[in-house]
Image (tube, rainbow, N blue to C red; front, side, top):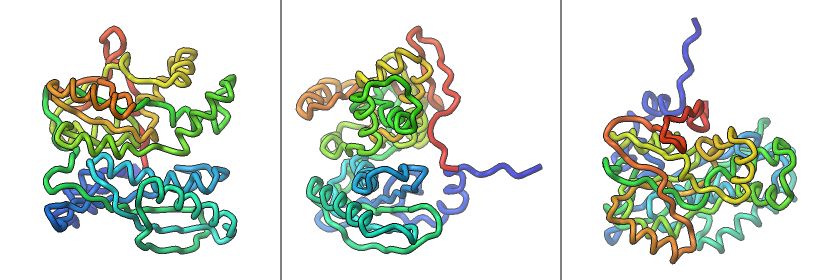
Length: 326
């Protein structure tokens, strides 16, 4: 009988967690915290994207660069950190031309201005496989104030920023899998897939309010499961409360099975966090100030795992909790 393949997290636990430095949080979070000067922690995070897996071969290279940078900035946002800079590693096919590189660099330059950061170094090499691109982002947060996955408490409410499912539906649209969708809706959804919006201002304002936080990259159910596991609690999602854009709502109304895009589709890079009920008023005010919806979608309970309830309060089966890397 063939041995069962290890998933991403079991690989980390078995082979890499024993190597973790003290600031690496046991490799159970999306970042590491390193002591810095003046009562600050440096926050370090790294993410890679691969052609054909995380972006399409015909995606505009400027947007590929911006997605690469933004998915890392999103991890900093989830810690409440202010970005400082980044390092870049590119492994590009030998045939990749200078025009592609010029557009890629232009995308980085535009986002450096938008987010007030600069390139700190990195490496570049050639490959006979698909393009593989990696960023290590550096941020800072007051020492002891970073919001981790592990702080969720029984009785907390579960919140998300923005809307869910747009990116997964955008990928389906780009692959020609959403027949009959209006061009404007298709463009909106594709944009949400190609150009995530790291919620940096929100993350920084949630320091001291959120008990636990991460960004939604692999899918809502899977990522809330990471918070629940790190915090030794259970979680409940009420599907009727999920915030949907008009484009996503119309698609799901026509085909309810596509609700899976919001529950497990991933790539939205919205912030998922828990907070005590006493924070309700502060969160409502913050949502208005930032002009960004913050929606309560469930609760934290004693127990383990994540349960999804339908609009009748009955358990809803979610066959795939989120994206699996292996």
